[in-house]
Amino acid sequence: MQLAVDTFKQLRDLIYERSGMFFQDNKKYILEGRLQARLRERHCRSYEDYYKLLKFDAWRDSELTALFDLITTNETFFFRDLPQLHAFNDTIVPAVMEANQGTSKLRIWSAACSTGDEPYTLAMMLLERPGLINWSIEILGSDISETVLTQARRGVYGAHSVRNVPPALLKKYFEHEGGQYVLSPKVRQLVKFMNLNLYDQARLKMLRGLDVIFCRNCLIYFDDKAKQKIVASLYDSLRPNGYLVIGFSESMHAVSSAFKPVHAHRTVLYQKP
Ligand SMILES: C[S@@+](CC[C@H](N)C(=O)[O-])C[C@H]1O[C@@H](n2cnc3c(N)ncnc32)[C@H](O)[C@@H]1O
Image (cartoon, rainbow, N blue to C red; front, side, top):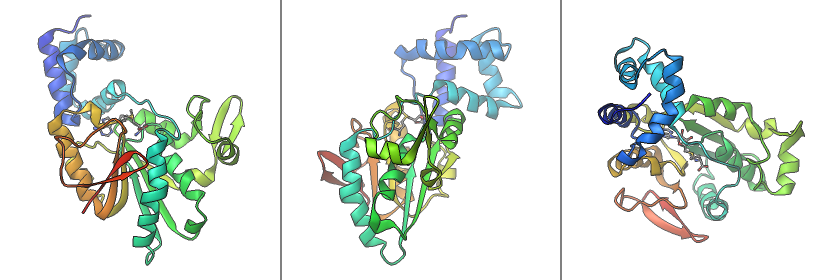
């Protein structure tokens, strides 16, 4: 089955409208490849049929969820991009602890968390800080893909995902069973997961007063306009002086000048004034 240019444009406009993810003209082959099996499963004889199903079917919303599962790139691993995590540990956490000493509460959101490796990494780092023993720690992990969230809730990982976990923490927080690494309930209980589309501004309004937001390696899938919209929502979700951490190779250039850049450990953190 071939994806005609006009149908590709209809599909990519629909995806953009609903998620902010933008497929450039040269990425037609990606959509074509990733949707092929789904077309067969849904008994569509062409990409045009599939587009109609997404647009007009009574179950179109659940088909859209299935589509997001197929088109998202979910690469992630524990302790990814260490300089940012050192900055979290040495700059962000002490600042938040000082600001919140009256309430002893810490609220973090990992906004495109994939299989949960990122929020669980943050949870482990916080468990390792004796100064936080009596604190109430809430970590929310969210993603647009239901498949990765199911894996995140399970908390079972392959060797590749845990390759960067310091050996002492691997021993302390994982059970090694049949070639898999099973995360300890102590870490799992700190993180709650939720399906959340970052392009859905109305739903993002329920998240307010956060101390820290990690939104790493996700903005690359959006065009500047969508990035601006998403980052503006993240800004509103932070409390004053809260921190936003974006991907190591991502930039706020042409996206937002509302944040104060804070340099730490050769990385840039974005603080809400
Ligand atoms: C490459 S992973 C990044 C995972 C993790 N933050 C990290 O840096 O290791 C990007 C994630 O963004 C999610 N994503 C893409 N578009 C999204 C949207 N509109 N709303 C929420 N999540 C989205 C994908 O499903 C994917 O799991």
